[in-house]
Length: 258
Image 1: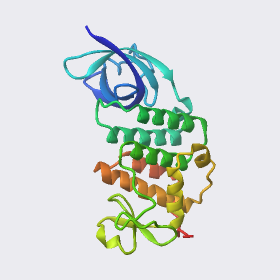
Image 2: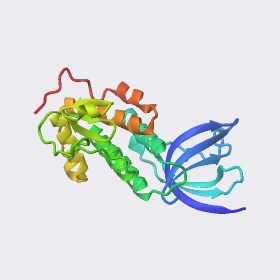
Image 3: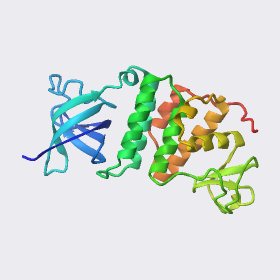
Image 4: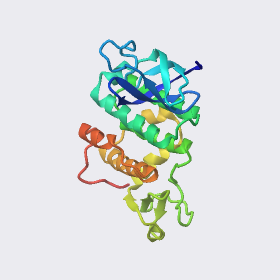
């Protein structure tokens, strides 16, 4: 019987058989893996509450010929209790976990994404709910995976765009008015929202956490980024509907441009 150890964040749980669970875990050293927890759904399961979503766990796994390695032992390294005790924070964690699950292929080590998820889970756990933090995660994730859109230069003619009117193309970034007919799927973007997205590029988290933005900018940024993420993954995000139900950012009557 071959054993190995790893640790990671539990992203997803799926019922399997009469009493088992399949867990999707983003590990520190292996990447995203799916593993089997035998008997985990039984009332007297030996795992207790150690296989809940969003826990950071250390695992001892048994290699299986079926392709689903089996959990032998599990130890919780961090609970992120305030995420699990707050409906809004739980909803945000679901969204981030779904993004990671959708973007990452199985068993490709990506320590930077693991580190990013731990950092953002820690901040959501410690701080008041902030969509600015969620947008920071979205930008960092697509940057790490090679999908970051262009927010400074027109993707059609390479012109530096400053305060002039422009569009966001889901094909890869902003386009000027002259080039907007060259791309098929696009939306108008206000200069205020574009400025905010450029700030997110700087990777200065202390500065980003101090931002106080009007709901109109957060609403527009949220709509653009979620639609862009769905476009590049070619999948609907299931947690998007739940995020809307939380009404963290209300649709404004009008978005003012600067």
